[in-house]
Length: 148
Ligand SMILES: [Zn+2]
Image (cartoon, rainbow, N blue to C red):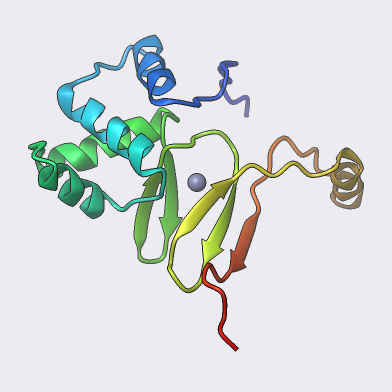
């Protein structure tokens, strides 16, 4: 199946994200802007519930439904990232393919751009017969030094 590919540069800032909304013909409501601003400030992966709590703590009034609907719209358009975890969905500001460092002790997920050597990818392609177009690696570790 041919997937529609829009060859646009990756979103690297809040301004890029807002611009992408406009290109895609998405209305940038106050609430939508609040969510994008928060994700770009926080620079971490947050659950809808946390996004709702933080915005309301900042005095930015937004309803539950609005948070969920906007997150759904933004992630389905590829403007934000959505990670499915067993305990729910998390949303992040980086939407193009990237890798994650999962901190086992703090439960945080950090974004990292990892580039594998070309010959390594070729080797996997030869072994599997699959042409690799993108990849994402999950690293696991401890953020805090383990005291011995
Ligand atoms: Zn991420």
